[in-house]
Amino acid sequence: MRLILLAFSLICLFGCNELKYNYMNGKVFGTYYSVVYRSDKSLDSAIIMQMRKVDNSLSIFNPNSTISKINNSLESETDSLMDIILPVALNVYTATNGAFDMTVGKLVNAWGFGYRNEEIPSQAKIDSLLRFTGMDKLHIETGKVVKNNEAVELDGGAIAKGLGVDLVAEYLESMGVENYMVDIGGEVRVKGESEKRRKWRIGIDKPQDNLATREISVLLQLSEGALATSGNYRNFYTKDGKKYAHTIDPRTGQPVQTDIISSTVYAKSCMIADAYATAFMVMGLDKSYKLVEADTALEACFMYEQNDTVKIRMTEGFKKLVLKDVY
Image 1 (tube, rainbow, N blue to C red):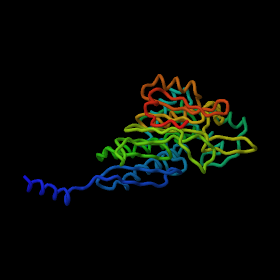
Image 2 (tube, rainbow, N blue to C red; image 1 turned 90 degrees about the horizontal axis):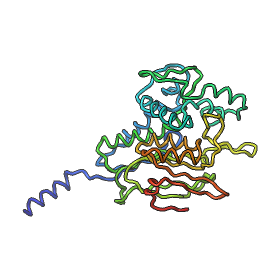
Image 3 (spheres, rainbow, N blue to C red; image 1 turned 180 degrees about the vertical axis):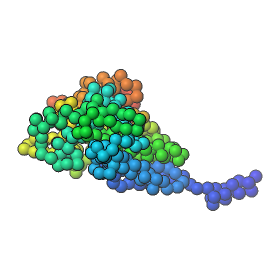
């Protein structure tokens, strides 16, 4: 019996690959990414390929991407990623009464948050661009996007990062990885446990304009699922004493000015969480909370300002994810 045990130990010592936690990070989509996964081999190169797929398909900053070619009316054919993302975008557009809208591209550029650095637009210009805004101004045929007007311009900025997270997560699962965390620009998806043999711990930032500092408001613990946060306290500019935030209300053409400072959504898919987090910034607190309560696939945490004090409102399901509430 001892000989058998000794032989087995030697086999594992010299022949078994050890599962270890692999760490990788870098820059992608104009932001930073971090991936942690437990595997007996490096999957880094394939993970980077998953993220490059998103750039090649949905980056408006890449002139050769599928979305750029469609925007410039060079072609109408979609690709596999657009075939995934467009039906989801249409569903969220309908569910939020147009608060989420991928046809906001021209307005994003007009306010200086796209690939063009333009001046603050006049109301006349905004009104003219609104004529080309609305997902009802395009429809999807088999393998094609058909625009009612060639001037309609798509922008995947509010959903593409989430898709990138999902692609990496689903690739890892296809390789048998049971423990991972994927983070692209604060959009996160996890499964299993961390190297510390506990649920993954994810922090939600305290909303503040100072880019040099970062404080955690709420600390979560997750063993599965995805999180996406949208807030107007990181991406904005100030001109003539007025602050202009990057989230544009596609219904008015103006930067959003609702009571929500930060919107965090928990869902099975990071792509879906990403889209709703943006939409809720446009919709405001009460309407967003009601929508989440009615949708069993979503949970959310909203930070808002009341009497110069930041307050937090969470759905009951989201409260169950909280490890520590800093406020």
